[in-house]
Length: 183
Ligand SMILES: CC(C)(COP(=O)(O)OP(=O)(O)OC[C@H]1O[C@@H](n2cnc3c(N)ncnc32)[C@H](O)[C@@H]1OP(=O)(O)O)[C@@H](O)C(=O)NCCC(=O)NCCS
Image (cartoon, rainbow, N blue to C red; front, side, top):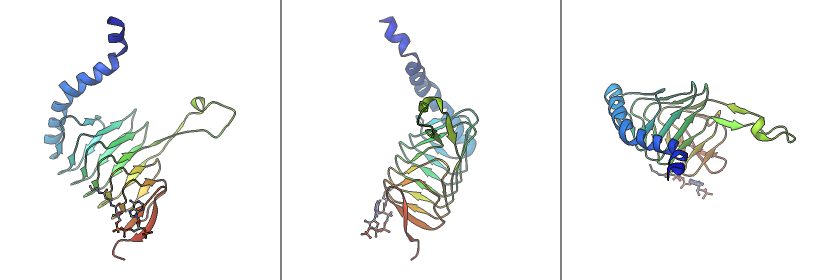
C-alpha cells in the first residue's frame, strides 16, 4: 500500500497542483493579463500573455529559463502542448488561432555519432517563432528552430520542419507551401 503511494508521489503532486493550485493561479493570470485561461490549463511561471488571449485546457510549459510569449487576442484551444526548453523562447504573435492539439517543440536529441548512445550525446535547443494572424489546423506539429511568417495557414496534421514564408498555406508531412493566401 505505502510503496505504490511513494512511487506515485510525483503524480500525486501533479494532481494536487492541478486541482488545488492551478485554478487560482490561472484566475490570477487571467486578471493580470486581461485574458481567459482555462482553470485546469498548466501554465508555467515564465509564460506571458497579451490582452484578450483565450487559452483552453492546454499545457504551456517552460523549463530552466525557457520562455513563452503569446501575443494579444491569440486563441490556444484545448490539448495544445508548448514546451520551451532551457534558454529557448516560443514567441507567438497577435490574433493567431491555434487549433486543438497544436504541439510546439524546442528540443532535439543529438544523434550524430552512431558509436555513442544518444542519451550521452546531449540535446540541441532552438527557438520557435510564429508571426501574427496565423492559423494552425488541428494536430499541427511545429519542430524546433522553425519560423512561421505572418498570415500563414498551416493545414491539419501538418508537421512543420522548416521556415514558412509569410502569407503561405502549407500542408502535409513535411509541411510544404501549396499556395499563397489570395492567389
Ligand atoms: C489547409 C486548408 C485550410 C486548405 O484549404 P483550401 O485552401 O481550401 O485547400 P484545398 O482543399 O483546395 O486543397 C489544396 C490541396 O491541398 C491538399 N490538402 C489540403 N489540406 C491538406 C492537409 N491538411 N494535409 C494534406 N493535404 C492537404 C488537398 O488535398 C489539395 O490537394 P490537390 O491539389 O492535390 O487536390 C485545409 O485543408 C485545412 O487543413 N484546414 C484545417 C481544418 C482544421 O484543422 N480545422 C480546425 C478548426 S479550429
